Image (cartoon, rainbow, N blue to C red; front, side, top):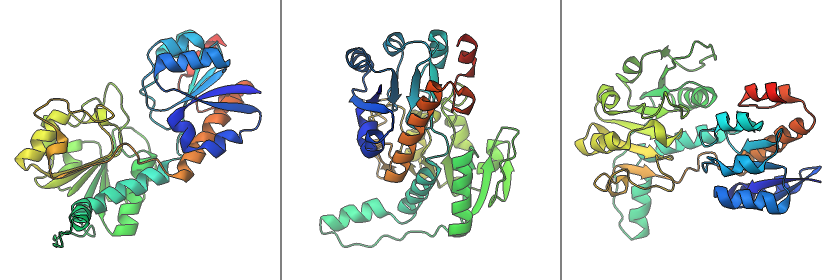
Length: 324
């Protein structure tokens, strides 16, 4: 049996899928890099499946050439693909299997914001029976920033399910079939000019770091809400705090943060102190269905590596094939 070390949080999310992986023995392991590296050494694991924790060095030294670092999820900024390629390691992720879960959660955050659901639930629990006047999503304008598979799915749900007017911002020269989108702009300013809600669906890269900064916040229509289920690093949280306090933004519904677990980027700019902020702990993709699909896809990528069917893998660092 080929052993796979799976970081504990990811193992717990899809234990049955990992336990039933034919031909593999999946073992739960710590997420912290030095402890994960030691677990690989002591267990004899050949491959690893990891979550969002950052891996910067030691893990790459304990894996052999041709082995896999499989990301349980889509975002892969926590894996050093350059270092992995140098070491001859194959890096993969699990695209498209969590689109439904993240898109549904994005819509849930919009509903929670529009109808004050977190505040109402908190009030009712302590005996405060007071109404708050919310707003309908129908006929509101949603700007989807980043029109990849998840962003497009959000756009379709918002338009066809809630009757929203949907515009997008997409800088790539691709045609993804923007069903439900009224217009897709290349310029951020145009996309957000009339938006009541701005929803982020950008990957975390060098080019998108603090994409939403003070300058771009100024371009958003006064009184809009921000929703982020993408990556925390695409938002400058100092600028976000200022936009929320000043009233530039009516509020923010956030599932991802620059530092996770959340820690404020500055002591005087703690988002937890603001009543117009909804915060959840990076759970948009955490449905049982999506977790099972991610586990199965991660194991499948490892199976394909074992069979040397590299062209069928969700390979993130294709240059590594030159060394194999």
